Image (cartoon, rainbow, N blue to C red):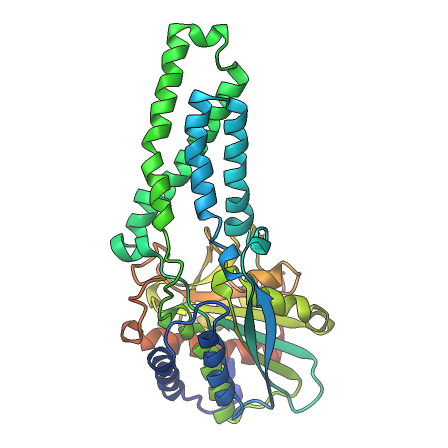
Length: 419
């Protein structure tokens, strides 16, 4: 039985789904793509803030700085280092080749896999924003429930658009990384054996290294294709990713307010973050600026990201390319709330990439992510195809229903605990 039914006889999910779809469509049509740290991103947040003034006692837009191209700007550097290492190793020095391979991997690991602000200082600075809407309880704030969805949209992933996400992953992205690994092993082996030594002149050994060189060369086209991985100027509509997440949270607050649900001691916060697509920069800025207040009272954070593929809706257990694990209690709060709404959701992992929840988990603030996207990924992901026409309202409805239930459960029972 839904706990939300104890708070109100009826929460109008359908009405608020229509509100969400209308809001997403309006932003896509009137404002358009919203690259990280852009005036369009800010304008969309201002529109959302105006809506939330009707349902929240406090709204504000907080400013922070970022270097949006830092997150993916390493790609040309990594490709050049990887390709150059093959020929430097063959014609010159294995030591230099190993150095090039190490240099290729460093930004790939720290920026793309771990979302560290590693090379940001090398790129121009921009100003981005977080929109924060707070619905206060009737009494003293003793618990806090935070929802966060990002309002920016990604620069177009050209390969996803041209050949599809799964094809791009299997035929370009994975082979490119495998090629870089092979080239690194090739350089290290040459360094250990001693290129040019007596051992290298033995015919069997010699042919082994010739084969190694040829195989390394075979992977070069895949690495060069990575130079066209994304556009550096054109961003996408971002209707599903992630205006759907923003409006799932906004519609949840609106639905609770219209149903007359007022909590005694639970504060509900909705953050429309900026620059998530530039490496979770908005969530990181908010978590850093508000860390102490988020820890002063019990707080649960739910990232809402891409409500489109209902059959793939899941709760994310691990994040940041699997390097961080989300809070047990928050994950099971979501699972129990979903079950009360008739959904049996699985725990999944963000194997490559990250969600806004990771910024909070890294600072030991309980968090998890609710999302509904085919992990292949689908062809609309980060491409011009992510338009309002592609929305699936039933998925947004499910998100609103689950979040209303989760908030009411959290107010009544807090986070689940392990037995």
